[in-house]
Every structure is written in C-alpha cells, then in structure tokens.
Length: 453
Image (cartoon, rainbow, N blue to C red):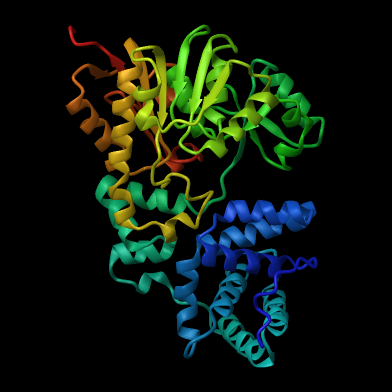
C-alpha cells in the first residue's frame, strides 16, 4: 500500500515541500497560507524555512515549464504524487545552482522509497538521471509565440493571450517573467507611533536589514528575517503590506477629523493606513461581507494603537440600506477582483483561475461603486482599487461606472510620489509588477459633483 498520504515533518525539507504542493493541488488551498502554517506548526528553523519556501514556490511558479521539460522522459502514466516529486526535484536541478543535481536526485529517490516502493524509486531515479545526462528541451522549439511564452513563464495560454491583447507582447512578456521572481518583503511604518528612522532602528536592532523605499515614504524594504516576529511589529510600529497596496490610502488622502468608509476592508491593511494618514482623528467605518474577517481588522487596530475604526458586517452592495445617505466625506472601494497582480505571491492563482471566473467580477465591482455613490457626500471623494492587471476589471469598470453615473467625475490622483504620478492617465493608475518590483495594482479616483454641476 502506498504511503504517499502520510504528512510528517521530520526535518526533511523536500518531503515537507511535496506535502504542501500536494495539498495545494488537491484542496485548491493557497500555497502562502499552507506554507506559513507548516512553518509555524513545526517551528521550522530559518535555514530550512528559506529552502522550503524557495522550492515550494519555485516548483509552483514553473509547473508548466517543468512539465514541458519532463514530458520526453516519462513513459506511460505516473501517479499524481510522483509527478509532483519529479517537478520538485527537477526545479532544484534546473533552477538552483547551490544544490548539487546529484543530491536532488538522491533525495527524490529516498522520498519515493518512503512514500511508495522500490519500483517507483527506480523509475524516479531513471527519469532524473536521464535528464542529467541529456539536458532539457529548449522552448525555442515552440513555434507559436503565445504557446512559447506560456511554457517559458508557466502561465496558461488564455491568460497570456489576454495580457497580450490588453498590453501588447512586450509588456505582457515582462509581466509574465516578473511574476516568477520572488517579491521584495515590505512593511509600512505606523506614523502615529514612530518615524521611519525610528522603525528602521528598531528592526535593525534585532538583526534584520531595512531600508527606505524610493517610492512610498512610509514603506520599508526588509531584506532578511521575518518582520512579523520583531518587537517593532508586536509593538505596532510596523505592519506587513505590499508597497503597491499602500497607494489607495494615499490617493484617498483623508484629512484628520473626516468621516470615512472602507467598504471591503478585511483584513484591515488599507483601513489602518487610512487611520494613520488621518493621524487617528475622525472616524472610519470598516465593513466586510464576511463577519469572521472583521476580527482581523480589530486585531490590527489594537496592535497599531488605532481607535477611530469601527467594524460592521455589511455587504458593501447593500450599504445604502444600512448607512445614512450622503454622509461620508471619503470612501475606499478596494473591490473583489481576479488577483492577477499578486501571482508572484500566490502562484497557484494562475492555474486555478478560469477565464469565465473573470466575467462576473465586473458586476460586483459596479454594484459596490454604485452603492458607494449613494452614501458619499456631495463633493466627497471615492477611490476604486484592485490588485489585478486586467483591463476589463480596471479601466473597463471605471468607464462603465462613469457612463451610468453623471454625478461622478474622474479626478487627478493626489499624494503620489513623482514616479507614480507620471504614470497616471485620466484619473487612473495601473502599476505592473515589473514597474517597481511590487504587486500589480490599479487605482482610480472620483469626485461627486451632485446633480446641479
């Protein structure tokens, strides 16, 4: 009987990576959540943690490329778990220079013996050693440019075609390659508790390296260690957030004392950023469709020492049924989206998303924006943001919204650093992963003119 379903951490990083990859594949679970859970539960040490993260993400990032390389060497069918073991092993052999290829082969054979039997171990050994001798096929042999780009970057063809249709082959190719590069670790300084220099000093006192971002003044790049385990994090001097997702709160740019609504707020990264910009003065209502997620916002505000945020379990589309009409000075709609801008953090997204999944998202986005206009004051500001790079969900949603809301007008994006301000057009900003090494992100801003304007 096969022992492939046994999941045990016994110090073997590759076996743990295989267990995570199988769980991601079977349960459609997010790799980042499973990885963090495994690290936490088994208290995995730093050196093992780094390798586990690298080989898990790397194998997922290049799954289609690895299958292309493996295909000529596999005869007949292989068990599902064995194919994942071959991908994991070939990733180390082909992409990681510091791991001797023979060591990766030997580890794979041992795992095959433990999880299967000698026959499987012999097959794994034979396939991997053949690859060592012969090398892998070149993607240059693929004639069709869309298919070649799909295999080279390990993205489904429909997605490659969609990006090429949206932005042209050069921009699409840059983005697809960038999606396979691990993201920079970034944190946001809580300016109500510390200056940027004080936060850096606190982080570096614990042996991590932090430097100011060239882009967002409140952002730090942390190049080693785990910021979430530092005293600076526990005491609320910093919060973990990607640099791109710091843009919406800056564009909203609410003044202290304002009444603000964050309509899709959980887990609260942007909510707390808005509160910090407001110097913790005024009021913010943070709503979310899922009541259990509101606990995450409360936890974040407590840690950061923010007390102007209230939470409520409200579906943003029904906000006018529960909230006073025309009563908010500023509203953020960070809408549900396809997440195609964060694939470097969640590589599994590119294999689980289907093109038809994207079609219903615009309806939700427009319903949220429509509801927001009803509770927004005359002359109030509305900011729409997504973590996607899909034109239909971004510019398409903005155009559809403005065409049905004559009382709203697109306005220039405020409070952006020069590098970002130069990229905006018609009250919209699209950031690609390759622009600044951050997530793909979109922001648009509107003002409520009122009927008489």
